[in-house]
Image 1: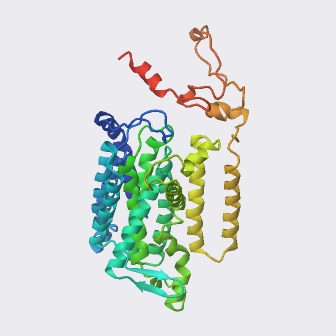
Image 2: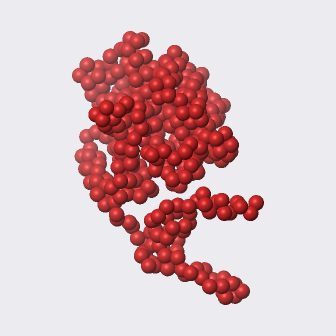
Image 3: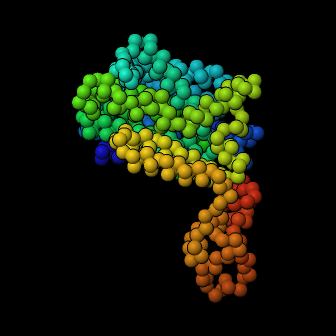
Length: 439
């Protein structure tokens, strides 16, 4: 566990430190597209954040290769090299798209080629646990087609949900955390070495997202772009492929019976990981709804619009930050609910807890205008939007020379406070231009 945590921290540190220079490079390179009709941000923001995330991935794999225990993953398996090859290809396609806006069909072809590259190096699904039947061995063509389909679905699901500041990176980080706990349990508790690569992939993916997230929270200073969203989608799919298609369910010995019984015992986790519907259920549902919505209107499934789930949250009155937190909540509920169910599927407390949390989530969806307020004694420590209406926070004591200057108290929700507003538009570019005009 210490080596996994070290790999995670190194990946996060490299990603975080490189994101600043990458932002400056993106501005110089002109990777700052104009505001589109479907965008929710109001200021041109540089892309290419995936460059920092890719180098964080490389740093994580390099560090893991030199650690005592994790080095065995590279010695006994070719999956890390397969992941790096596919990630490099999909990252390059994403960088070109962030700069030149390449066609959607070309991106789709690139995604399929990247998945094929991983298959050629051994990262593929070999068998499936089917309820009532047992393990079903797949032919080479069946495994290849299923692997490519899983990679393409996961990449596009993550790409579709990348519409708000910090949304995609936070949701994938939550998914990776749940996936890491599950894979580590399979590897450590049951001694199955085939689960070690998936555990490593999940740790690195968490580091990539955590390192980039501080730069991407609202208001975002940089976007990951397709170079980042497609990259983290591919890494998430690679982990699901590794542990779902190559770990024998019967080796878990969860049930002292036939292989069919063992499959029945592990189905609550294996099937969701195979089609990752619990780990990325929100973006997957968004993907399906977007395809149906656009096809129904006679549009191309790849035509962009403002009908995604996060757009609808904004339309019903939720703020940007609240919409992101609600999406985080549902992602964590589904991912960790599936994880808890895999540990003890017979516990009614788990089901009851999921039901209660689901009710809380529905309540949050129906209260878009509700804003939590802090006690009066703590109002000076929180942003203005969380203070009571009309509350004025007394400024700290200053030297006597400054007491003669008149001061105008600032109320809650006034534009320009702390660089963000509860009502009204931000004016960061104007303020920044005034601040830099004296240089």
